[in-house]
Image 1 (tube, rainbow, N blue to C red):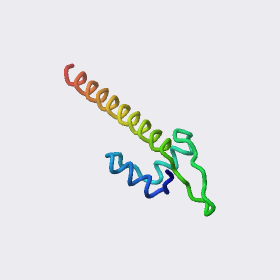
Image 2: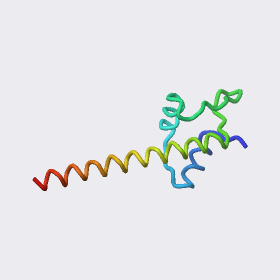
Image 3: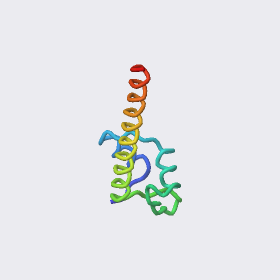
Image 4: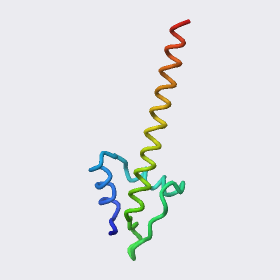
Length: 82
């Protein structure tokens, strides 16, 4: 099963993962998502493996945001305790 960019983003959005085209392009550039093949009109054709990679990337991003928020809250509480 292959899909274009819009279908790829729509599939992720239906799972609660709201990313934009530039987020995916950046992830491909940084090799966090493997580069999809191109169709004859030079458009990306995404497959199931790309969905899995995007889900993993989103999970890592959420974990980093949660860890940063926790660290910030801890610093704020420590600062108030003094």
